[in-house]
Amino acid sequence: MASATLPAGLLDALRQAGRVVFLTGSGVSAESGVPTFRDALTGLWSRFRPEELATPEAFRRDPQLVWDWYRERRRQVAAVMPNPAHHAIAALQAWLPETLLVTQNVDGLHQRAGSADTVEFHGNLFSNRCRACGHEAPQLDPEIAAPPPCPDCGELMGPGVVWFGEAIPGEALQRAWRGAAEADVLLAVGTSGLVTPAAALPEVARQAGARVAEINLHPTPLSAQADFVVTGPAALSLPAMVAALIKKSP
Ligand code: APR
Image 1 (cartoon, rainbow, N blue to C red):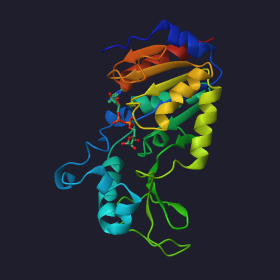
Image 2 (image 1 turned 90 degrees about the horizontal axis):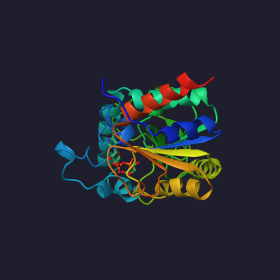
Image 3 (image 1 turned 30 degrees about the vertical axis):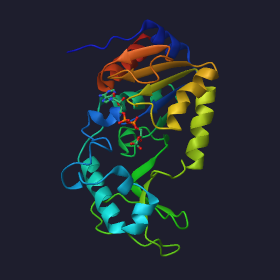
Image 4 (image 1 turned 90 degrees about the vertical axis):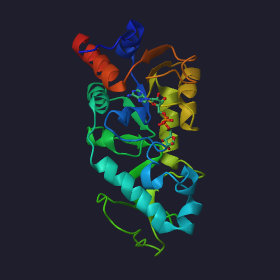
């Protein structure tokens, strides 16, 4: 089996850390087989640009089209399983309860792996939200054929994800910012570091004195600022990291 090379300094920093923050992106779900947003625009959907499907304007213009696209994504995600990277993060949270998980992923795979208290920066595919009155409700069945009416105001409800041009949910933003500012170690895993405001979190942590680690297949804009860079698949590096920590602790 291939092994991941982990900087010794990272393990030491984690052993000494009281508070750890994970910032995860679509790379964490890659090995579960979840296509990234842009990769998912294939086949029947290849003639659309993300902005034509993932905006409040697109939903107002053609709610059924946008719903159909998200139904497809819900189906894709419902058919896959969390991978060892999701499970390793959940294991670290169980071992070090002061671990905050902030994810940009909307696929719910962290929760399915056992990460109960996840800060969902961009919402969740398996929920609906009314853009008119703010009502939110879970929607676990990926097959619902048409957008349901809001039980509070009667407008059509759309998927509970954050679309282009929409604000990050206030509580998620607050918890993520506070977590980063109070962190001893922040790990950015499988994220390109290009989409703000999430991309600013490692710098918030660094400015406040945290050590910052990046786990990614490729260099990103964060790599130059990170104290530790682990190059390789998250489904290999994270289980190795967590096993080393849990095994060697008294
Ligand atoms: N292990 C680690 N990293 C990986 C792996 C893997 N197996 N596979 C891919 N990556 C890395 C890529 O190198 C890239 O840096 O994951 C990153 C994925 O980048 P993006 O596709 O830009 O995903 P993300 O950073 O999550 O995007 C943020 O953008 O499209 C919007 O709302 C969407 O939440 C998403 C946001």
